[in-house]
Structures are given as structure tokens and as C-alpha cells.
Length: 219
Ligand SMILES: [Zn+2]
Image 1 (tube, rainbow, N blue to C red):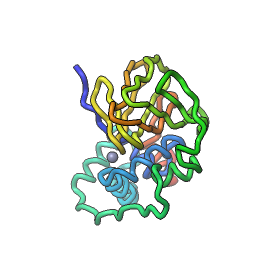
Image 2 (tube, rainbow, N blue to C red; image 1 turned 120 degrees about the horizontal axis):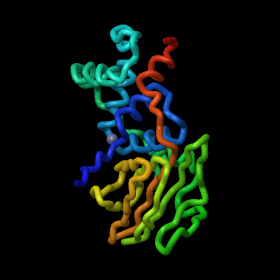
Image 3 (cartoon, rainbow, N blue to C red; image 1 turned 90 degrees about the vertical axis):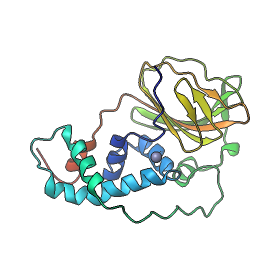
Image 4 (cartoon, rainbow, N blue to C red; image 1 turned 180 degrees about the vertical axis):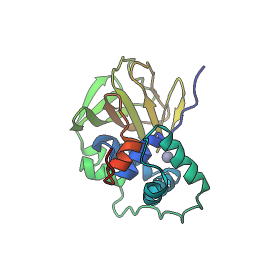
């Protein structure tokens, strides 16, 4: 049975991002997704707004996986926050602001390395610890070769779209692949697809615990 793609970063990633504890490379992907996604911007704003409330209302002991549920339950009771203004784009760019700043150039100005016909990765890469990011370009209808990866992979679509066995991904969508899960990406036939590709060892989410640790709570 195929699952329906989620298309957004996992809630744990958004929580870590709001708490400022998300790893740099993953934070780049989340920040870039936020430029496209008002729902996740609202979610992050909620997490930020409720950080202080949590410290008052969630007992510090024991810290459990239930904490995230407690956060989500609190948020579901919360009034809707005011709409977040669209981020300003003073410079017209294919890349969302955070990614444009990280890459420092438009995609066409980058050097590209051909993997197989139709599939290129950027020479630009960001590497921090075990995590790395680069841009991935799929020509129209091109297939990313089947590959066995031991790392987690996340893709954020920046231009065009692609499909895999789970569904289709359009601009702004996030796809996440666990280690050892084969997946077969095929670029849309009607144009080039450009993605941000993030790879890392399986994440040990620092989410709920990191949230409290970042605020000075010690256990
Ligand atoms: Zn989203």
C-alpha cells in the first residue's frame, strides 16, 4: 500500500526549528519551505508563542514522548494567530530567501555535476557535521537512478515537480525518505525540476527535550 505524501516537514522538525535547536542543514530546508507554506509558518509561530506557556504548564518531570502530544493539544485549543505577512522578496529569485542567502547565486550561475543523463547535482553544497545539502536538477521525464541510501533524505521542490511511488510533489512540497527505503523519483515531463536535497544520518529528534533544554531546564 502506498502512503499519501505529507508534503510538509514533520511536526518534530517544525518544533525543533521554532526552538532554535534544529540542525543547520535541516533548518535551511525548513526555513525555505516556510517561504512557500503559510500553514507551517503558522505552526512555527504557534510553537514559538507557546514556548513560554509550555514552561509554565507542562510538568518538567518526567519528560516523555507525550510532551509533543501535550504541545499539539494545547495548540488545538489556541485561538488562531494573526496571519503572518508574506515574506518580502526584494530581489526576484528562483530560490526562497534563506536558500538564496546560503547558495549565494542563482541556479543557472552554479556549476553542475552530471550523475546520469538528465540528472545533475550542484557543485554548491553545504556540509555541517553528518548533514549535507545540495541542489538536484531533474531534466524533463528524467529518472533519479534507484539508490540505496543509509541516510535520511529530504527534498524540497523549488521549480517544476516530480513523482515517486507515493505521489507527486510540486513547488514548495517536502518529501522525506527514511533510510533503506527505495524510492524512484521521476521529473515531470513538461519541464525541468529543481530541488533542494538534504541528507543526514537518521535524526535523533531533540524536539521536546531540546525545547526545554534550550530554555534552561535541566534534568
Ligand atoms: Zn508546510
